[in-house]
Amino acid sequence: MNPIYLFFHKTGSPPWFYRFAGKLIPWLWAGFVVLTAIGLYLGLLRAPPDYQQGESVRIMYLHVPAAWLSMMIYGMMAVTGFIALVWRIRIMEVLTISSAPVGAAFTIIALVTGSLWGRPTWGTYWVWDARLTSELVLLFLYIGVIALYNAYDEPRKAARAAALMAIVGAVNLPIIHYSVMWWNTLHQGSSIGTSGSSIHPSMLWPLVFMAFAFKFYYGANLLSRARLKLLAQDHRKRWVQELLSGKEK
Amino acid sequence: MTPTRKRRLIAVLVVIAGVGLAATVAFRALQENMLFFVSPTDVKEQSLPTGKRFRLGGLVAMDSVSRADDSLAVTFIVTDGLASVDVQFNGILPDLFREGQGIIAIGELTPGGYFEAEEVLAKHDENYMPPEVADALEKAGHPDAGGGE
Image (cartoon, rainbow over the protein chains, first blue to last red):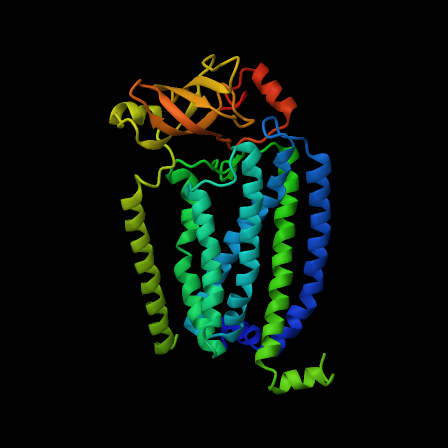
């Protein structure tokens, strides 16, 4: 058999995925704790205040990683949703729907921290500029995916509908990213791009640590949710029965 | 790839292409309205009507800010390097407001030719640095220093 198909076949088997994710999760949590500790120490204690924003620049260490992740998770949902729709792999359906609440949570974090930063810096909590509005639309898309999934009784049909919505909504991702270039916005342009960064290194490092910490959190949370969903869906199947009776670990 | 999968793949790709096309068309049409603010040059060229609310964005011109002694009233000039607009404002300015800073003023043009602002927001740029670095840049005459865009 083609090795790619073999890989899909193996990861596509719920008992195998359950065990594999179970082994991975403790490491992801450990990575999250260590990186967050380093990131918060550097960001809150070691990094200097900004020359204009003062101490409120520290909100960036939560805001920017959360905003990046809110978009990355939606992108992941679109990719896993695409695979789920075309190849009908159940693990991918489960991963798609399990990503949505995590992504929605990070979108809310990005919106709230941004709002708290905006008040002292811009002089307002909220404006309807292209960046802020498109990020709010992202939150509605996440909620839409979750709502659509819950609107169906049959989980596989529900997952396919949610996956389609995830794919269609992905059109918002380039809009969020390029909004600050295409239109005049109150939100500033990207500080980090292909041509380097306009953030001083002493402020960039805590940001990098926090960005990776958040990604580890997403990994751990996603896999935990996916495992739970598989158990619930397969609770009558033999592998779950064996697992529960302690025959298999 | 089995014919069923191929059919699904094509169906999903068609949906993606359709949505992408629709979004592109919609945003091209909305281009004008999506602008959060207009520049002083736009104001000059388009001769915007008085009494219509809009957002004016640009830099606060150097040595143009003058505050009243007995009230919060302040006047300053907003410029984009090519054109400039006189602005009057009566209220609390954000902390980042200073000469050379990018700002957005919400208000309307008056028959007197100046812009009466109801609200002033400071725009932050994408540069983040410690105060010492900003001082050093300013001393070296670097254009990034001292705020602005």
